[in-house]
Image (cartoon, rainbow, N blue to C red; front, side):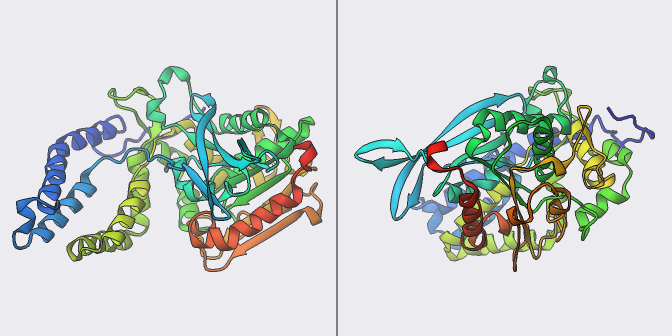
Length: 435
């Protein structure tokens, strides 16, 4: 797929060794991590005689901080077991609807007590949340899903860590991503479906729906695109600048590595999660250092609520996955370097992506005023491309004071963004008789 013009290795060990060295370092640190975890419990647990010693709180806090810095962070659970609707808790069941090598389609099935029988709220519109495949797991959208469940049937793409996919399954490209989205739309049925894409998937989602429209296939009733890189030439950010100013061979030579033999995907070329995590932290190192120092102080002072909030955030933030190399390099080239979608030059499987072909689908774009990942105008650019959608069926929302995560998670999402997303979807939902 990609022919490297310069064969340059990353560092003295070359590209084939970095992942192995990382795994060796993890194994070497494991005993110290276990020891730190035990120390935190011995000096911090109620009833332990060590917790009554002078300075025990500081020792326990230091041990726990060391443990959390060194531990492995596994993929978190969604943990959505109920949803509150009008003051009543309704049970929620998570189940797998479809499975592909690189992604699972999950359904959060919500129930309500209707006429004395436990049954699903059948007339609510269906929403497919396309989660980003860009480092973090789909659980990063937990708050998005939980909020949507109040009024919708909710599905989400749960991307699989590429290191867990055997190399025999073949490559995964950006074209494959587009195909997955189309297959999931068909699986759910477009009749009363609304698609919400968050960040990176705005591009493949727009491509998927454009191609379906061009073929005359049914398309979703609405698209909600949030903080995505439709046209990164608009208000470029630090992330955009890196992709634009480094040649493609640099990304392949320095960021792509084979999966070590201790994982099912041994030999598969990936952009490793640990390198992505280093990039996340490098964007705001002072903030992360201060956050860990505050965590230590909260433990010493017995401020357990703030300490637990820190644990929850970093349990999610530090859990990262490997991305397939082909998909990652495609994204760098197509989205950030050559801007093929907004230039009208993107072909997927031999078909030209033409968003002007979309007719019967409404469009809402959402941007954060302070977004430092997808700058203002990058998502809104979708309106310039979707000229087949009537002006009355298109809308845009810029969320004042919101950064990237604030438009789909947290207080601003729940109180400012979601009410407008909910009303937009309701406006274009199919009549109950057709649902």
